[in-house]
Amino acid sequence: MVLVGALGVITRSNPVHAALSLVLTLFGVAVMFVAQGAYFVAAVQVIVYAGAIVVLLLFVIMLLGVDRAEDVRIEPLTGQRPLALVVALGATAVLVAAVLDGLGAVPDLEGSVPETANPDADVLEIARSVFGDYVVAFEVTSVLLVVAVVGTVLMTRRRLGTGAGR
Amino acid sequence: MSGPPLGVAVGASWYLVVAALLFGVGLFGVTVRRNPLVMLMCVELMLNAVNLTFVTLAHRLGDVAGRTTVLFVLVVAAAEVTVGLAIVVAIMRHRSAVTTDDLTALRG
Image (cartoon, rainbow over all chains, first blue to last red; front, side, top):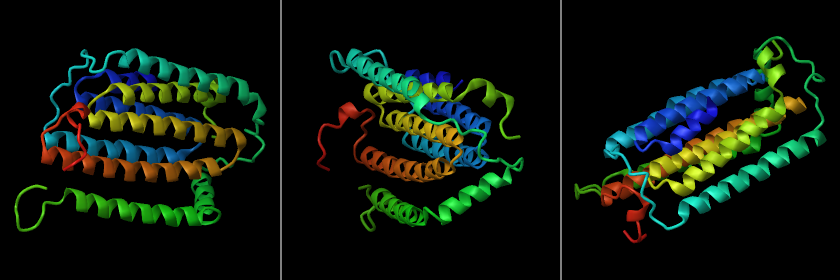
């Protein structure tokens, strides 16, 4: 399901369809998170990604009216597609090989940490980690968010007085 | 509830392989597609592949740090999409360019 959605993103010529395929992929990844006990991260994934980011993408698609289909058959640069396919397949092959080869070196501690049956424990652990060990990173990301919001507003506002778009 | 039956049956390596394939698909998309919005979506695919890897290894190692990192990655992804969309909106407002082929000059 995840890979079908991902293929949909890159093959649909209509951006709206691509965005909806992205939702499929994001939900599939969220299901994988739940299957591995990361309940809180799965919830955040659905809310932030499938909720906010995809809605933002769709909003911009419709705001700009670029939902006319891009012709995916024409190839602007000669040899771009084969080269891109080679690069992507090579990267994937290297990653898969690294996973299959290196996973044995990772100790399998899946059952060693006593996991409580309570899903709330997941939230508690993450909260302790975020506000304990990683509190500096947390503050830095908050600054990043503020900077991103201010930059976005500055970039997209119309200049006052002229009435014309920038 | 320490792991539904599916998680036990599938195993960590399959999640990692799926993540690698997802990353490859995203990489192919971002190099081939010419609509900047679709390119942003493909970057999201690659970020999701990395998130999946983080969660899988955090589960396998019994360490919560991986899940914490995923939260930070989510925040950075949200900021990245916001800024990227703002740039796209600003460009489209300036001139009606639909694909990245139409953007040959950075001058405004």
